[in-house]
Image (cartoon, rainbow, N blue to C red; front, side, top):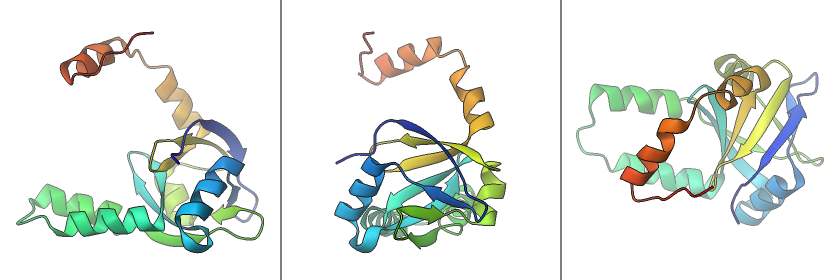
Length: 149
């Protein structure tokens, strides 16, 4: 099962986010107790089922002599990782540090991204979807992916 789709939500006054039912189902099926890791990257908060995150950390630890930039990336992504668990209502608390990094105040967009999901501030996400993506088709084609719409 993969995280797919888009959902618009609002944080409650305590910074808790009700995940969509299909996202909750995926987390419960892939991680005991719905445990997940939230981390900051790419101007949003990313969520991973705990086993997927642990796999990422294992792979990352195999890097030999990482560059300074890679070490800084690790500081951001792994250093901001927080182990979370869904509460009884299927909510997850977004920490103040994650909210500050992603510019999240109240209204958010959740985006399924396959093995993970992203939590975006509504305003930041609106800026993404208004971009011109004409050059993306060429980049995909260069990678061997044909986009036929």
